[in-house]
Structures are given as C-alpha cells and as structure tokens.
Amino acid sequence: MAVAVGANAQLAQLASRPVHVAEQAHSSFPLGQGRDGGHDGGVGDLDALLHNYDERIEFVENKGQFNPAVLYKADFPLGQALATREGLLMKAYDPTAVQKRQEEGMRLEQEQHDGKPWRPLVWNEKGHGWLLHFQNALPTMRVDSRDAHEEVNNYFLGGKQALGVHSYQEVWYTGVYRGIDVRYYPAADGSLEYDV
Image (cartoon, rainbow, N blue to C red; front, side, top):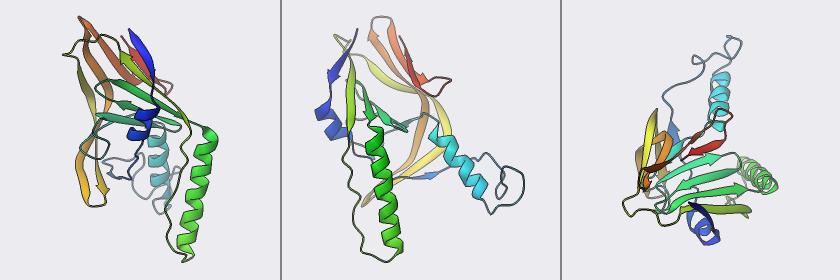
C-alpha cells in the first residue's frame, strides 16, 4: 500500500539542483543542418537537441552530484521525481514561480553581458511535494534502474565532480512486498506512470 507523506523537510534537503554539463552522444540532425536541410551554423541541431530533452523523462543516477539520500532524479518542466530508499519523492513547482526564476536568470545573464558584477540567482521555490512511501515494505526492498540511455553526463560542482553519470528509462522498487514490484517509467504522453 502506497502512502503519501508530507515532505517539506525532505524537499528542503533534496532540492539542491547543481548545474551540469552533458556530453550528448547523438543529435536529431546532421551537424550544421537545420530542419529544412540547409546550413544554419548548427542552430537547428542545438534547437532540436534542447527540445528533445525538454520532453524526455530520464532517471539520472547519483554519483555524488545530488544529496546522498537521492538514488535517481528525474526532472520535468514543472517538477521532479527523486527516488530514495524510502520511496519516490514527487515535487510539483508553481508555474508562476518557475517563470519568475527564468526571467531573473535572463536578467542576470544580461547584467553579466553588460559588465555588471556577478550576483547569484536566488529562487523562492514554491510548490508541493509528496513522498510515495510503502508501508510495511520488506527490509530487502531494492531500488534498481533499467534501460540505460546511450548518453553520459558529467557534473562539475565547484571542487568536486561526478563523471560518467548514466540515465535510465525506468526505476524499479523491487521486492516491495512478497511478489510485488513497482515500476516508474515515462508514459507515451510524456507523463510519469507507475505499475504495481
């Protein structure tokens, strides 16, 4: 039986979102060609890549780039799913707060371009969170990933780094109860689904 638990404390601890640099191994268009096949200096290639990954749910393994309680993390346009040993923590952000963060980020970039002193991006994270926790789960329950993507990501976080980080199509809570597993995966419409 899955139970939703208030997750404000977990949200505060798990909400760190480090910047990462991704080495992408493929692209939707040949390098330097736009959607119409003409040369566009690589803009179409980048545009296709960015839009493809905006709509794709993938579970990124934790190799030290996230809070240690997070085993896998999936980002959505307006939220996150954080796989922990206790269950899946879901976060849904307020669209207005996300829009304000994006606008502030654009202002900061413009300020840097204009030669003004650097200042950090401050975001008042607003939204809801809930933990999908399995009551009386077996102590032998495991959290596993399946169907690795080809891409490998590298994270550079100040003085530390996480290299060779893989992402996966699915996260499984295996052996939740005797003979019962839970599978989290992206649905055809781009939403996150689960099967028990």
